[in-house]
Image (tube, rainbow, N blue to C red):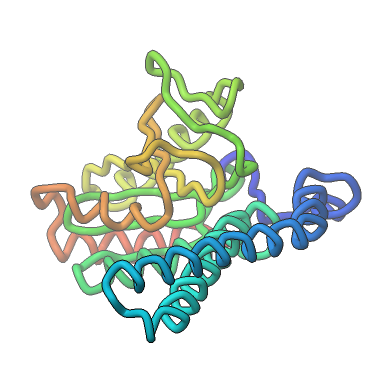
Length: 255
């Protein structure tokens, strides 16, 4: 990605006293507390299930209904805990964000006439995780993650990660989009404008799952293909898409 990639991991990034290491340590140490809380919730579910059975004159089935509701409560609580931990997988280095996003893009866009090229760079300059070329235009998409408690927001047109300005993240991607567009336009003769996106794998986004600020769209990975599909109009023909894809494959270095 422009300005570096979280997937080229320093030797000690996920060890020692890194935030990721502490997160996993505290998560493991808190397992017993989570189990105890789950037992309490399941107990409450059992009582409620029995009460409901008695309320609707199902006395004979009340133990079964209580156990059923207790099991559902326990399973739901376990799933929510697992989901919260799973969401941090890319940030913790357990999964690769570009692999996740590439799969979602291809699954949703390939059958609609879009080409998806992964891991491309202008020699000696910017690099990006995904280049998407299709009927509605061209996009570059990078992947990034922040700690689970980092709020990502836009205030008065400025991008923020928690209390920090996000310009150092937005500017390289916007410049990479411009550089890629210039190269494709020059080599193909087709006027190209590229929209930059950043797939956020960990961090707190607004309820909509998307933030637009400083020329960059930050969104949940599952929304990237949806946003692209929602663009109305056709700016590239099938022939132009083929030409741009061929030029991108030839001129852009694999990374």
